[in-house]
Length: 148
Image 1 (cartoon, rainbow, N blue to C red):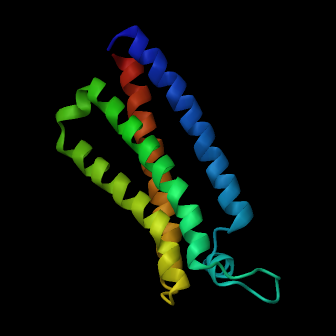
Image 2: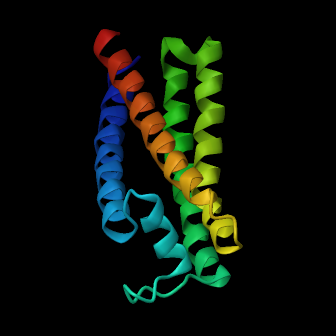
């Protein structure tokens, strides 16, 4: 891998890690990491003065997230082309899991608002799986830069 590629990947990895850190902090602050916290955030809670989310409100949140989740995933996964991992079958699995977990993380609030409360667990699971995969891809890229 050329030095210019390595440098640009390192810069992108640093900003990706900052984005992940801010995502975790915002998720914990706004929603929380509990089943009840997720339900309260989307379905509302009169005791805590939390209004329920509407479908149109969820769409306003989902649309920019579709772009940003797709962009960070596509760029990080595209950088794997510059590594020795590009022909491995496990890389294809990581690609599919990344986009599947991103889609679930974005669209599970629609299920929650429409009465499928079990989707709150799916929301939490997809959030952690997506961030774990992004961290794993970042580590793979960093590892390939250091050892190439």
